Amino acid sequence: MTHPPKLLDDGCLNREWAESLDAQELRAWIHDLLHDRELDLPGDREGEPDYLLIDLYEKGDIHAKRALAEAVAGLVDDMAKGATPDWHGEAADRLLFVAGTVCGQAIVPAVKRMIRSGRLIDPGAGIPGDIHFRLLQTLVALGVEDGLDFWKDQVAISPEQYLGIAFRALLLSPSDDAIQLLADLGAPLTPKMQADVRRALEVLPDRFGDRYVRDLIEDWPGRLAPEITHIVTPFLAAPASPDPPPASSWSWGPAALARQ
Amino acid sequence: MRLQEYLDRKGSKWKTTTVARLRCLAGYDGDPDAGPAGAQSRMVHNIWNEMRLRCAVWRGLCEGLRNAPEEPADVHVAVTQWARTPGSALAGPPVDRPTTCVYATCVTKWRFCTWLRKQGLPFATQAEAENWVNRLLDQPDVVSHRQELEDVLLKRFLMWATFDPDDHTCDPRSSLPATANSVRACLGLATCDEDDDLLVICYTLPTRVVARFPVVTTACASTPWAEYWAPADPGEPWGWTQPWPNTNQARRPEVVHECITGATLALPLCEIWP
Image (cartoon, rainbow over all chains, first blue to last red; front, top):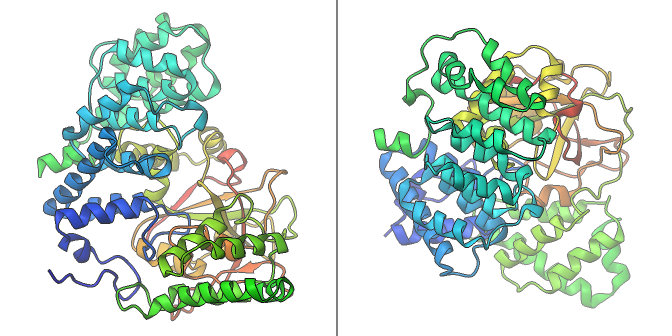
């Protein structure tokens, strides 16, 4: 098959080229891209190749999005099976980061298999670096609801690294698992943990409206240790906002794809 | 020192291999499917013109090239790996600026939001990260911006920055063009983000962090290599941006330094539109 030119005159990637690749070619290209084997790609000076895939996905039509999602899902499956030995380190981190943005539920079994195996836990590597964190983040990005016990187990591995994402995950659930997670924490929260909890709460009003958030957390101050109560009290004092925006105005990812 | 001086000292064996590999990389542009015309050969030209690297850094290049097969892709990887060796990308000499100097760095907004997620901030989606940044942009005081970003790295690997050469405490934004695309053009940023919103981040440097000349290792450490860049001429007090051609934008001072958090923001983050 003849493809259009890979790059435009200004050096930018030609979207039509990427969209003309068949499934196998696309998968091979993404593989090389995420392993830094692509030489002539546009980006900013601190850009990374995974950003380019996310940009392609965001600006592509439904067919391009689906093709990209399927190719990435196939690579995640390879990674989970250990089918190719080179999905580790930076390349694996990039792959999962892209997967969390572009893939749907199809990759959940593979992601859960890798989480359960525990073989990628490495809190000492920081973020980015700890692939286990990226797996957890991918689950949350896909809207997968796991129970309190699952997330407590994750936080127990590294409270500093995993509390924020676990708390954010449990905020998806209508039960009071999120407050329970905080209330059950034995150790005091470090400044990073406090900041992560605050940031997770800060994005809720945009999605659900201030009233929802106030209803969700109104009884939290009495249930939390005094030293972390101050994190939630500003949200109780926030003025009521109008109804939340429709989901389509903020969603970007598989949910948006499903609606198209 | 220049690469040529280093090779002259090392002898013909090193010289032959290094020259051959770099020639192979420059010749890569001859492949019609290879990429933007001249991108590889421009960087090879920059490598030969760079004069602010120490002997040890050039040795790293020569060793990397010696071990690389004579294929353009392999030579490209070898050069990138050399540039990413710890210390290489920030191997330029320090730039003499007062500690109170206010620097500005620019980043495409969606890339910044992506980086926030990537470094582990607890946002489930890109949209959540963007909403969080929008809330921050609504806050007019720098203190809130500092508090929110005090533990957040503003970039990942290193930071390119500009400043006002006439008044170091001046808000650098006041001398930048008014639109995102004009700012990109004058700073020589990548054209692929044209028409996306841009964030301008102004800060002072923590005392432990040193502003340095960008050198060819800085430009080769990114993916892709910095397209609009060239080493500063001899005697220049700092680096200079390479504005996009045919845009009539004036060049700006340019330095690089290691990544910092938002703890030393001098002004609130600001968003500019295309």
